[in-house]
Image: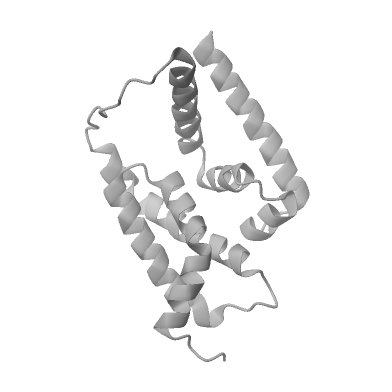
Length: 169
């Protein structure tokens, strides 16, 4: 068994991979308080799982994605009912300087909403896809075949195209 890392080593390691954690948390939690709770839970899970990390089996970023996504999916499942019971407050949005900026912002919010409505695995897949991960990396992180990644990406993209077409029609 590998020696346990020191807190200082763990902090340096987290600094290298913090973007992964923030992206996963942002994808699975729109509410800031939930996002902070999820980030904390991901840190705990990473700390507990770190002694089992084997660099010969997976790159560090792949392993971090696995732990973060599994934690986020579990967190999401536990908190779905709690989130549905909330009454959302209208956000205070500043007026964009032009119509194009407003349209881009609206499209981005629609894309986030559409992705948020996907099943957990598909949501994780799209997060990785939008971060320009290769099909091979996505397959490795999610534990599915490369051809399955390609098929799922194609189907989800078509679903998103249809949703956008219906929204603009």
